[in-house]
Image (tube, rainbow, N blue to C red; front, side):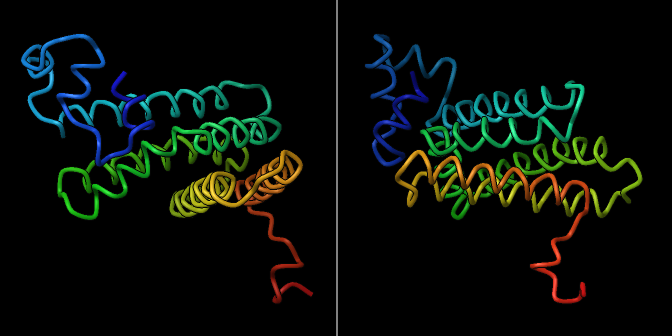
Length: 188
């Protein structure tokens, strides 16, 4: 219920009183579990990250990590561009002004880097640890950017599918450390 209100009404309209009313409970009862609005927001954000990490971890259990990167990209990007991204945008906004949410933002990204780094390790077991982290950061950046583009600028299913397909191919290339000669002038 709190997540739906955050996504539907936005961060500015998100209040303990509104959540309590929507849940049909007294404000005091809600405050028993979440003393402050920030406590409730943190719980909503943590629940969202747990769901997304479950998707990533599912890819780790699959037979073919390379094949499943495409499905992982599709699931995460579609989830983030269809509403759940609003939870992360709220976190990013809060992180600019609050040490608490800045720390949570770092924690969220570190969790993603670790999970996606494990996927990189399955695809390229010989990769050095610092390189695994860098690739995980690049892959996360690509997923974040693709989701933002789908939400803000891509308007047709064909465009959406093409963007996700290309992003998935790039994710596999990053994970496997394959560089495209088209984008690397150092490659003859």
